[in-house]
Amino acid sequence: MTLKMFPLALTLLVLAACKPAPQAPVAPPAEPPGVAAEPPSDAGQPQVVQQTAQIPVLQLATVDGGSYDLAAHRGQWVVVNFWATWCAPCLKEMPELSALHAMRDNIEVIGLAYEDIEPAEMRGFLEKHPVAYPVAIVDTYNPPKDFATPRGLPMTYLIAPDGKVARQFLGPVNAQEIEQAIVVAGGKVG
Image 1 (cartoon, rainbow, N blue to C red):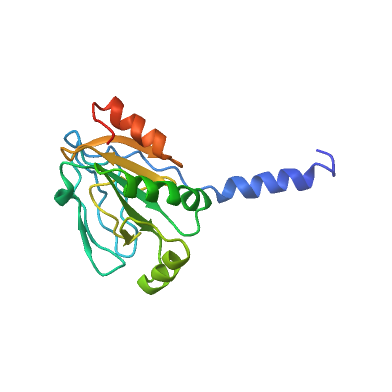
Image 2: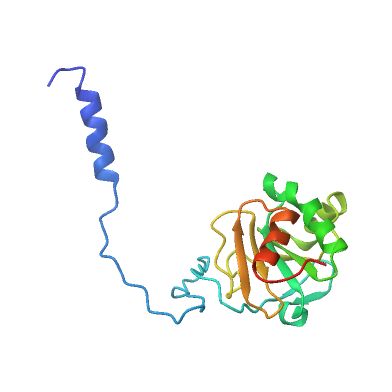
């Protein structure tokens, strides 16, 4: 080995020593279709939900002091939008989701702020970025158990009038895509 290659070899050796020891794979418990799977609870660790329930339950307090219960909106198409104030694509889609919520009688939107933010701070943000739909703050350490933990933001779910998940969107979505998904699922846009 030449003297010039010694630093490279030493660096590779150090990096190889820093790798964690391989762990034996653990098979996840079998879950019935449509049931959200959760790993065991670790204090202080965020809960990770692997799969969204076929008919998700969602009950949250909204930042305007109200409450939101997804089951109370059966008979409507509901857009459940996970977003954050720091997410540029999220901010870009907010006006269009707000217009969709305001213009369509059979489509409603609920915004779930997936971040660590105080309600007063969120209300201040919404004064600068107003929307027509309700917004709730989601505890990132204890997110809604019936929705998969977002792999990225924005993450949007289209819930059919019967309460079932009709479509999931990862990344920005617009009104036309939501309306198309409703038509594909057999619904009418009105």
